[in-house]
Length: 221
Image (tube, rainbow, N blue to C red; front, side):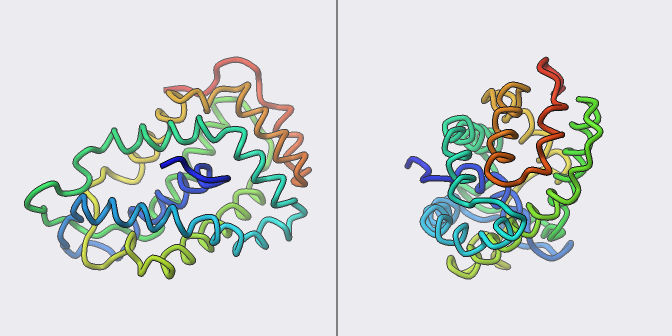
């Protein structure tokens, strides 16, 4: 199923946030692949509505939400390829047969890992601009969208009944980065193009960061 307008860019963040949510340590069964397939269909269905419902977090910062969606649309094929890469990277995340018993995950561990990786990537690229305010906006939007999706899908991705067999939050984020590189999204020219598009959509504070992106391969292994 082709992801609809702006779904692909949101599902990478929201999907990661949802997939590893839960309490800490207690053992729980692994989700079946049928459960995952059904849940993914429900998430794809409600995601555009939830994105629209949470747009106020972006609009309050001066962004034009429709313009932001068009920025995402331009990169849709690369982002879909990234999501497909992530799925293929963890073929045993869901149970095809007898499920394992797995520990639940710390709810915000993936969020912390995402922010840390962003900081490391900017350091690699020698970008010194302060993007913390924009990160906070993205976090608020992501949490809002995740909560909306959870309610509309009966918490299928945050079920207390089952979890997915995934690596640590840090390893999951590193693999996401490799998939972004493989899909030719995380390359300077594309990142800069998207950055300026988002800035033109109203997030003008991002413009100095966009200009600071060196047009050579800086996003490492």
